[in-house]
Image (cartoon, rainbow, N blue to C red; front, side, top):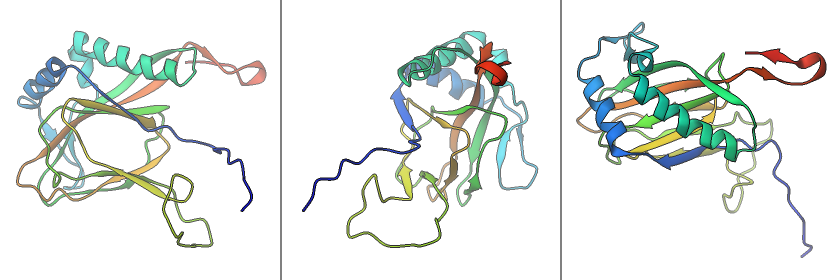
Length: 196
């Protein structure tokens, strides 16, 4: 068998890191006093879509963690948190496939307690014309990755990546904080320069 060097093409980073429990405790307290809202009876969020703006220290900590990832990915730019909201997934609910618009990266803070029944998040790509099932799934052949929520963890991914949340089959609400990140200041070069 020949040796084939395989290069990743258009890799999409999905990163997760453990965060301080004190940040999660703050978010739990905030979630106990939030006005929940739904436009479709399915997707339940805090009505306030700038929820971190009222909690400057918490916002600063989450921004600092986000900056760390952006730097590790090789970007040399400042960032800004644009929107931020709490999300509630009651038992029997799921989140349909979506992408996030008008955002560069999206972050999720899992600040509550979760079980294997709380509802995994799945990132996926649409089928590409011809579907061939591989003998073994790998990073080269899998059209999706499915991750379980873990308490005291923050996840970040490019906002354009399609994702969905599986049904919460536990007997408690699945709570998390979601936020969006944009570059701040001048980005790009030449005729594609833009100041955010």
